[in-house]
Image (tube, rainbow, N blue to C red; front, side, top):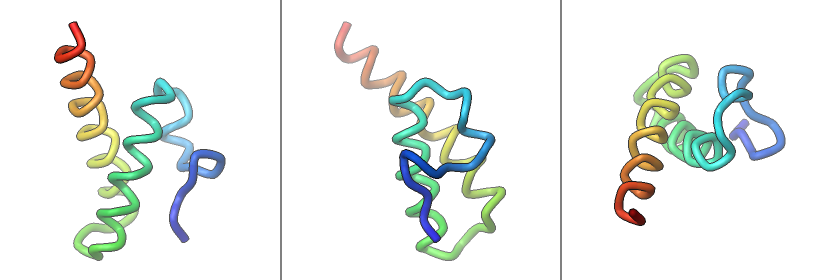
Length: 61
């Protein structure tokens, strides 16, 4: 079952909203591909989301 902005893994609960939304999107895509298990998808989603959001913020500056 894919995660949503209202139902997401506990590991994402303390993330800033922008990062959490992107992490959910990335983790769901990883799971859909079936290449990683749920735990790895969550960790990868969070890591990549932090990078994406930081890059966006840097470009705005």
